Amino acid sequence: MKWVKRIVLTLVVVFAAFYVITRPEEAANIVQGAFGAVFSATEAIGQFFSTLASS
Image (cartoon, rainbow, N blue to C red):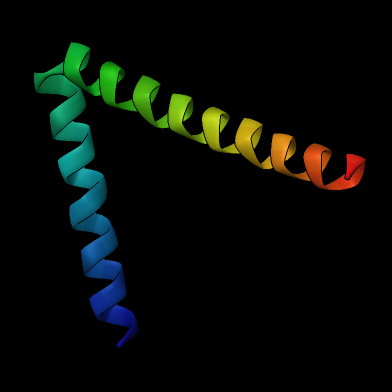
């Protein structure tokens, strides 16, 4: 089973590298969107706990 994980990981890395090389602007937009989503989720969790603590 380890070799399947290794093959899948290799394919994902190769695809990501190919995508970055062939479409760098779109790849940058995807990464920027992912970071934005993580930041928004972190902010929402922080607001939840602040509201919970103040109740």
